[in-house]
Amino acid sequence: MAQSLNFFVSSSRSPDFTISTNSYSKPMLQTPNRFLSFTKSPRKPLVLVSASADNGQGGLSAVTADFVSDNGTKPITIAQPDSSSIEVDSVTEAELKENGFRSTRRTKLVCTIGPATCGFEQLEALAVGGMNVARINMCHGTREWHKTVIERVRRLNEEKGYAVAIMMDTEGSEIHMGDLGGASSAKAEDGEVWTFSVRAYDSLRPERSITVNYDGFAEDVKVGDELLVDGGMVRFEVIEKIGPDVKCLCTDPGLLLPRANLTFWRDGSLVRERNAMLPTISSKDWLDIDFGIAEGVDFIAVSFVKSAEVINHLKSYIKARSRDGDIAVLAKIESIDSLKNLKEIIQASDGAMVARGDLGAQIPLEQVPLAQQKIVETCRKLNKPVIVASQLLESMIEYPTPTRAEVADVSEAVRQRADALMLSGESAMGQFPDKALTVLRSVSLRIEKWWREEKRHEVMELPDIASSFSDSISEEICNSAAKMANNLEVDALFVYTKDGHMASLLSRSRPDCPIFAFTTDTSVRRRLNLQWGLIPFRLGFSDDMESNLNKTFSLLKARGMIKSGDLVIAVSDMLQSIQVMNVP
Ligand SMILES: Nc1ncnc2c1ncn2[C@@H]1O[C@H](COP(=O)(O)OP(=O)(O)O)[C@@H](O)[C@H]1O
Ligand SMILES: C=C(OP(=O)(O)O)C(=O)O
Ligand SMILES: [K+]
Ligand SMILES: [Mg+2]
Image (cartoon, rainbow, N blue to C red; front, side, top):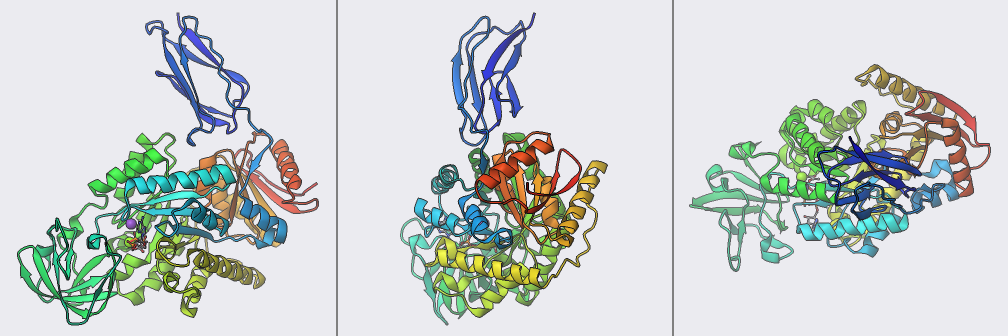
């Protein structure tokens, strides 16, 4: 006869969690105040059972009980929830209260975290300044360093109510220089001869010598090739090969930065010999990915993606290992191959990045703007979030104001209605990370406002993307709701979504009003933070839309974020309907 173990789960602050014993695991959705049973087969003795409740967020409601029993009943109480709470970040809340719905920023901001921004206060300053996603670049720093940054961001979220997501960016199999033996940079002058070598210098790095991370380097280059550092920031010409050493003459002087990217060119085109055969995800990347899964990062951005296959592979790898399979995979478009297979790659991914740094080293610079336009458009059509990255405010690494050209570049990305803009060196190692973020924020707000004032409703034809009939219904509802919202000039769209899909479909239409996205899941909330126009809230809700709406109205009213009379359109995952109403 089967026996049961009963756990009484009084409630939880975050209602989605998994209860597991050493032999059973059971996900629970919104099950406060009830008994949960595990049935044991008679063949397995009922002895020590370690039970834990884990909401997957690093222990908000974690409970562990060593359990000895023959009749198997042991009550477990999990922290009392604040069932009447709604979570939204304080910056959004203040913006909404002060300036109303229209003032909220639609374009999301990603900041690369580095030595200039890794402290808790520095991270908090970025969150206050509007950072939606923190990016860690596995090209640099140690895993311990990255772990500390992740912990600090998590602490910031828990203590201050932010939903800053974490993006881990893989190193990828690019060819790059070594780390300059700890020096922050080295100056290469016109006419100097430098040695690029695959040798690892064990002690001091000889003067004017650079290590290269790719073993085939000395074999692949030819005398006469042009060697570009960081896509042309410094240029050399290969003049002699001596075993593992390649002697190069500096033809365009400049600063060499640690681990700078290297490409070599022959007769005007990029040389892709054996290095083209390097795996997209190297063995070091797999270790970093395991680290990212263990740390529960929200996004993994894959460098130098060549095909959809590698994305599919990584997605199934994550699915098999991550607790909820909820790490989104972003494809970095930064190579010739990724442009060739653009549609399939984006289709397979959960989003993409226009990684203009390396892209500009692989295709002629004048083609980068067109590539950007095409990538942004393709992502929009396929409903995948897209980030425009690299050199948006490059001069702000050193100076407190951007160039006019940089402001124009940021404006163009906002005008293209990309989901997100990204800072790299500006926030990782620049002198003015907060100022750079402020520029992104104010330019975004200004261009978005201009766009609405001009009433430039979309001309973009959005193709049907649903893969099932029920998806088609969601898609039609969202397209119609967004259109209605514009025509009726409503104040906000509300979407109640468990996995975020309906929210992303609304975002895809780029409506004039902000989209309040309510989700029960904290990790979905963080991921929605990358998408255009979404204001993600965490809220416990049921399948009863009437009560969800009443609850939301009263919670938001109590906090002064909406007021009686505001016009709202609500849609939901659970109920396929569009409701138009005034806040009571
Ligand atoms: N974790 C880190 N530790 C030290 N320096 C970093 C880190 N992350 C970024 N940086 C610095 O910021 C610069 C810009 O960052 P990013 O654009 O992400 O990298 P890359 O220049 O390698 O493409 C890097 O070149 C590096 O100097
Ligand atoms: C974002 C990019 O990738 P990374 O900084 O990792 O080179 C880029 O190349 O633009
Ligand atoms: K990288
Ligand atoms: Mg790159």
